[in-house]
Figure (cartoon, rainbow, N blue to C red):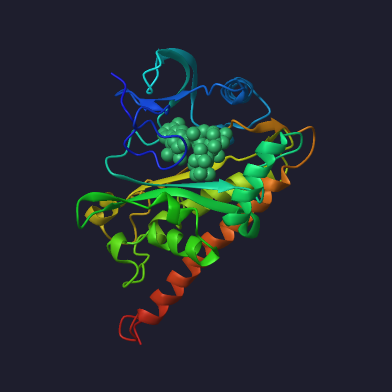
Length: 302
Ligand SMILES: O=P(O)(O)O[C@@H]1[C@@H](OP(=O)(O)O)[C@H](OP(=O)(O)O)[C@H](O)[C@H](OP(=O)(O)O)[C@H]1OP(=O)(O)O
Ligand SMILES: Nc1ncnc2c1ncn2[C@@H]1O[C@H](COP(=O)(O)OP(=O)(O)O)[C@@H](O)[C@H]1O
């Protein structure tokens, strides 16, 4: 039985009879092929990428596993429709906190229609895409105090400036109630476990960056980084040694606009990724500094 994904944070959502992705209970994510060429384009990308031996294995694991396409009942009630069948990258988590960040300082690319170009450039200018080289597209946090999910409002998210994006990235890894962040600043309690550590988000982003510094196979226009972690397991185990408790995960999603790299570096994605990494590093540094100041001389052994 297919159902609407509980943890989707951006993109087309299958609600109110609209077309959107579905999930099964076996850990599969079904993304409908959109009516124009986008769907087919994304399927072609997955076919090419999955069998591309020039892409190293350690990079393949940043992409959802592709299981081909399948005809299933569409969420909008229009009947059977071809869907991409992918691994549901959040299915292994009980209460995942998830954020979608669209990378690049532009989402349009050469040879798109005038209409599409205008639509993209408007959104790119109104969001932090142009100014920062990335924009937060959506996120949800598991609020362990309330035992429920808190979801950022799409309109507010798309209105973030640089400070808004920074605040969202801090909030994403905080243990104080997300709904209160206007009065209480995010405490970044999970930053070291989620963003930092040997298996954290930063290490994964740096590994991706290393590949993007040389890869000329694909240009990842309008593609997103999907970050996931589990805050409950950090809280249950506690302590700084539990670097793996967070199960921090980086995946790339949305390949409807990927182009052949034609031997040229994907500087749009690479530049955006570097900018995003700087934001994550800054948060980690600010947390380290705070921890140093908060450690009393007695605890320091002085
Ligand atoms: O439908 P909208 O206006 O929400 O725009 C979608 C975007 O949502 P946004 O408002 O930027 O969060 C959406 O962005 P996210 O996936 O939410 O980051 C996509 O860009 C989508 O286009 P495509 O399916 O990738 O070709 C966009 O869909 P299209 O409008 O291009 O169909
Ligand atoms: N393989 C996947 N597993 C789990 N969730 C996914 C997967 N792919 C996408 N999603 C969720 O769906 C959202 C939209 O995906 P995306 O591919 O960008 O769709 P669209 O083309 O509608 O923008 C993402 O932000 C994420 O929450």
